[in-house]
Length: 222
Image (cartoon, rainbow, N blue to C red; front, side, top):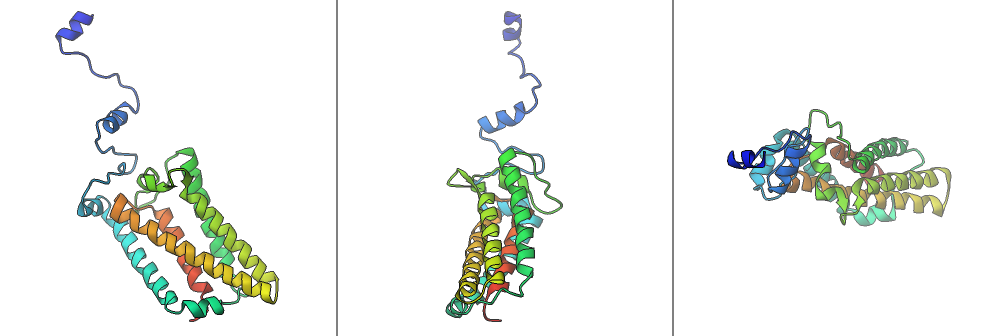
């Protein structure tokens, strides 16, 4: 049998599920996933944008909107820090925080289990989740930061809502700082999707929008 197969130039690989994908990775090729592609950072900017034009275009629009909100708030940063908006009547804050917590928890589940995400009609969540940017320092899932951030915002709002005096002001200030930090980090992540990874995660965009709205609601100046 050995002589026979050597004479005909060898035999093909057996039909093992997933073997073709592993071969593609070992040979340095871009592998197609269930709903997109493995990240290929060597592509040009135009090639990255063309891989997911609708998703990446949506991400760019969201990114521009986030930058406008942050720039407007930073222009009056001193006033916002000295006089953050009281949170007693801002029920939209816990509602948005719970929604953001649900989104982050789902993404954490995907990152921890390796299951395919339900991406919907826009974007390619699984490509983003398979990229190196899904983890902070290559270890901590980014979704963990989202869960922590939304829990911290809920805690700050609860303290501000049920307390009075200096504690209320401190809680409102903490909420504003948390929302500002979360939005700035979301801007960084949203930039990576179309311009570095070449794919967009609809769940990530949803979290970025939620955090930006939270920032807008916690500012002091209308």
